[in-house]
Length: 124
Image 1 (cartoon, rainbow, N blue to C red):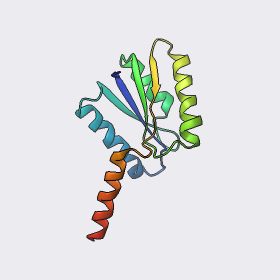
Image 2: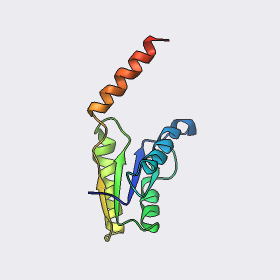
Image 3: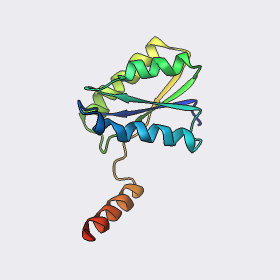
C-alpha cells in the first residue's frame, strides 16, 4: 500500500537541536519519493503534536496517512500512546485511513548503521 502522507513521530525534546534529525528525515522521505508529503510530529515537548500533524495531512488532501514511529522499540509510547493517537485521528477523520507502522526495532539496516557508527568511533 502506498500512502499520500507520512507523519514521522519522535518523542520530542525541549532542545530544538534534538528535534532536527526528525525534521531532516521528513524532508528526505519526500525527496526520495516515498510519499507526496511528510510532516514531523512529536509525542511531547515539541510541536507539532501527533493530532495536529495528522489534521494537517487531512487538510492537505491526504486520504491515506502512515504514522511512522521514529522510535527504536515498541515500548509503552508506541504500544499505548501512538496507538491512541491513531485511534483518535481515525475517529476524527473517518474517511481517511491512518496506519501505524512498527518502530525501527531490530531492523537489519539498523545493525548496519550501528556497525558504521562503531567503526567511526574507532577511527577517532
